[in-house]
Image (tube, rainbow, N blue to C red):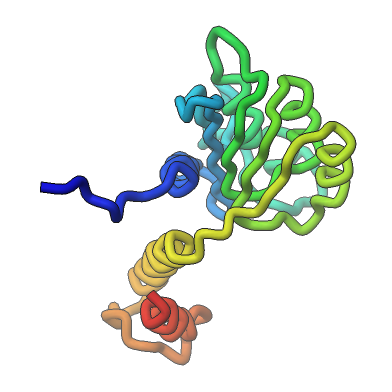
Length: 199
């Protein structure tokens, strides 16, 4: 019997782990995961966005806007990339590759450069990543967007289904995934079906 040939690639494997890590995040709006590997495709560390150790998720804010900025999540949340770097124990991250589900912010980019990571593969583009791109270019960090369309769409279907399930549970009576004109997410089922057709 010949070996199977339809196994996933290293990029699919490590980005899949980053996406799985993101599912641990308590952030109700943005879940980000990261996975760092060495030149021999060995996993060095993983991380996701969340509160610092000892800071209870239920006692700190998760909102994005407030009159007092200290009542938002931004002063407190540790980003996935930073957590992956800080979670690493022993040895060096020099020459490693970081897989992350969203392009790094400029603060995480600084840490990535400082620890010697030489390549960053990201899935989704963050809206304000020009400073990140500029620093990576100057520091010689390879910066590429993940292009595996099929795996990305499979992930998107899972996320959309989860969102629709959550919305349906709020309906009274439950609408059993039928489109509801009163539901703010009434187009999501069509989006899921369209995505599945591509697959």
